[in-house]
Length: 451
Image (tube, rainbow, N blue to C red; front, side):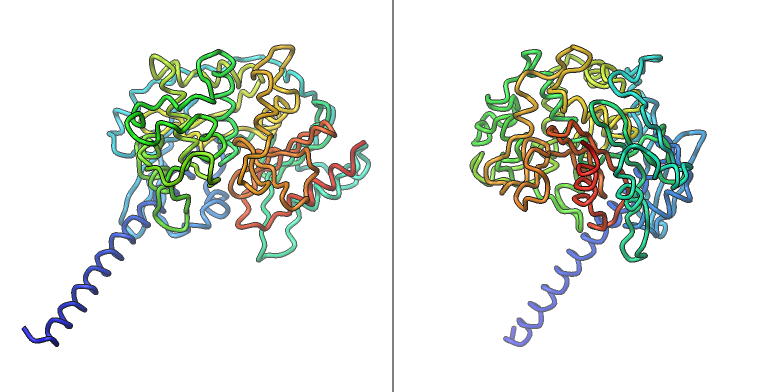
């Protein structure tokens, strides 16, 4: 074979390899997009009870070209892109929506929901001292004793079509009382809304409860049998909560990655993340990873003798105690909660979650979280440059927020902000593309408006 022929064959091989890689990449990307839409439409339809037109116009901007079919009788949603990559999500009462991945739908539906919401429990420590809804007139807002209405109204005002804010709900508590509350049209105090990565803070709270019960020790190696024969055996629960495990997990949503495979293509998110190899020694590098939150949920699940007791745990030990009756933690196909991303609750119920932390883990005289857990959760993680604590965010590196402020934060502008010095909890929920919402400004204005 001549040199020219060898060169041509080499170029052909490279071209074919690149083509195969590109086709495989495209197939993965299309399936992830289809799954994203099926899951979002399912949850927004059956959990939030929103109409499809608003979901399509507001929530599917990242993948707007899928064909969606909603089956109200079966309570399911299927999605495909140009007739290809069909995916399905199913709804189950109390468990929300789950993607049908790597398991038969009938097998998933056999998992009867163990969760029974209590009825008639009071609003507990949150009183409706000021209940403001979308129909309240601006003049009435101006006459409110709370002086921060201008900032709250601005948060709902769309002034630039290229920078959509799409704020859906704001609730402000001071001393456990609602002092300000506002909702977008078609959203109300009864609408459960997705917290995205605020779910991580709920996952760490579940860990805290198990610590209080003596079932887990965050300073000891994580009880994961898959890690006991290699260097990962030295990773502690604390390393996982602080996102300093050193695991090689790619948090990238712009392309197929560990994160997208875990959330949209796998039957068990935690097991996908557990398979991650060690990249750094624990506690040396901080790297934000949704995989670690789902590893924590897998650890939580393994503390219970069966699936039913595990799935009932956050409701019995957290949500029902706080009166968070709207809270829905959604599981993957295996039944494990997707503790990184998939929890819905009303703005008021998200506010109750923040209030628990403001009250140092106490609720109606009962200690829900162990002593010192709130301080631990809000203490800076080494090597995070002031950004992160323990499954809560700080953002103290730029001095924009007061030094005692910490937050549960989620994709598209979800915030539960806790301001201990002012006894404030500020909840903002929305569907904001990019960084179009100025949360720092809202927090500063609210702080200025209170005594």
